Picture 1 (cartoon, rainbow, N blue to C red):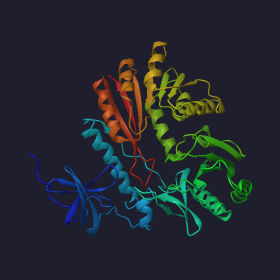
Picture 2 (cartoon, rainbow, N blue to C red; picture 1 turned 90 degrees about the vertical axis):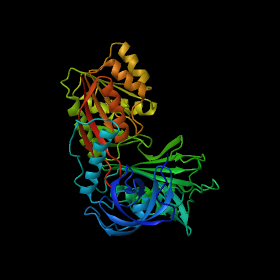
Picture 3 (cartoon, rainbow, N blue to C red; picture 1 turned 180 degrees about the horizontal axis):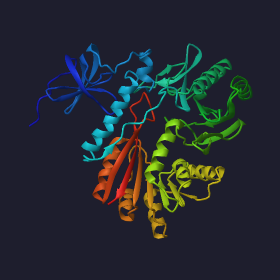
Picture 4 (cartoon, rainbow, N blue to C red; picture 1 turned 180 degrees about the vertical axis):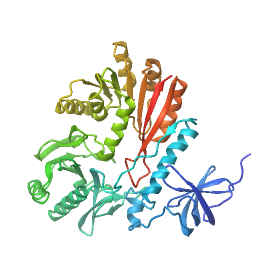
Length: 456
């Protein structure tokens, strides 16, 4: 028998927040019925308005705070907080780290049924601001001038902003200067409704260790008006720029980058380092947006792999070879597999760039390629997985269980799918030894973790 919902839409009620959801909303309960309220923090007493109800849960809006959490901090811009991707900006960094660490512990217990796993204190940043080395900013028009910023949630309205507090200053400056130059030159913004106009997005990438900047101009049209003058002004006003690229995306789509890319000025790539490993970064390359914490993450993965120099290592979901090339410094041989062919070409180029000869890369699905390697006699002593947010493919998990590598290192960007996959590996004969959460994206709800797993 279904219990009646104890609240109705437009009710004003007093609540105490008990927890946070995975996306940072406060959780309050009325007669056991959960209400999710953005901007609420555990322990706070508040008045909320119920804005939507469903069978299992509802949503509310914060109206008034009666008692504040000690972790609450004042934020300078409610617009930026609501729309700029900083979902946890209203929580002190100490509180953010506690929330993320608790999130990892809770899902391991609730989803993974893992009660006795060691979860270490989360590794945070010394400075949790201005860390992102890449921005892809949509462009629009207002009052005859170009604007650039971010979309309001569930809309295509652009909020103009001069800076993001999680982007590197060099990235913020590049976006603003390119926007100003394009506006001065009369280059029109793309209009989604009419599918007319030119400039869709401005992308900037920055090598934090090298000081090299790439600017990518993304347009609807193959023709870029005032191209020569645009390039001349960018070079004059951004001395760090090493590459200016034009990308054409003529389709009606929310996908940012199109298929046609041409270098307008400078080099095809810029360079950066993670630790001692050098990476070439093109306009289309995947590269970690927080290399400072990426080094922390990968060093922990290397520690958990515990390589002596005799091991064969397989890196599933290897991307452009970031983890593979770290592992290759300590392993006998590393085999990397990735479904995106362009990423594999980048991985091979990065191996050559660093003079690393004991890493081999193949394009394809991990659950297809790895069994093929196994049959050819290339069984892994250690297997490393760094899957997307949806977690590991079930066929890959079964391959791991059948292949029985002695150690598995799981690098996760989603605690929930991590816990699900760990349960499958545990049921297949593995033991989760320890978990190290790492805060790769301060001010946001995202949390990474590295897990040491052994065959029992």
